[in-house]
Image (cartoon, rainbow, N blue to C red):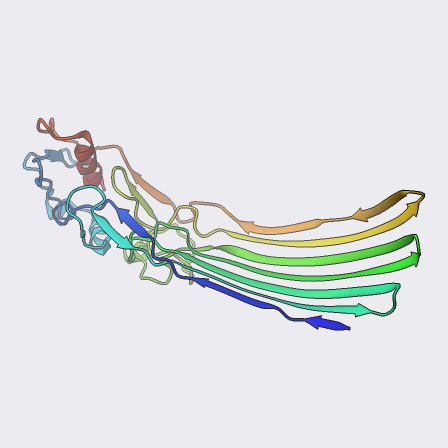
Length: 295
């Protein structure tokens, strides 16, 4: 009898550069006069603000809280005006325990127990409770038990069998899990119960700006379980080797991939568009202003 116990560990901590397009300090206050004075209006009442300033009194408290939670711009301009080295991690631990048993020259058997733990963090371009638009915390936990045997029936024939059981738990969790919930802070209802992996903010996609909040497909769960027995009979007939056998693969799957699980808010209608924009103002700039004012 022989035994083996190989163990392996791999850990990587990269810091890839990431950038995002975020509102400037003035734009977060409802002041749209930095390059050009962009006339806007109240999308609900129709009140015009030709000076390009949206009064604090009519701004959404929820939107103000989200904008306040965003990191400060660290690059000038209106595009890709926030950049950072986004910390990510990739950790994999794997171990196998194998035992080989040779009872005789005709009978051999083995058993193997394997386990792997994979944890990956994909850093978000936007940190903090209003960020997290990334794959976040990804995990995969695998366990497998395999046993097999080979029995030589004669100098020209043998039979071999094997059975394997595999369990996997895998999924993703939001990068902002565990942070204070901006949704609960403003009593936004209709959401799943608060759990340890609840994101602090759902998707808030304001056209022409980088999306904030958690990734829309997060958090999914995929937990497959497989049973895989196999048996073969091999014999030699003349110069030919003939093999016949049977193999079965049973797959049992538990999963949750309904998304967006926490909903998604999109702002692209430009309902706050006022009178004609000044000559020279680009369509990108006016799109940013109108959609942000809608938010």
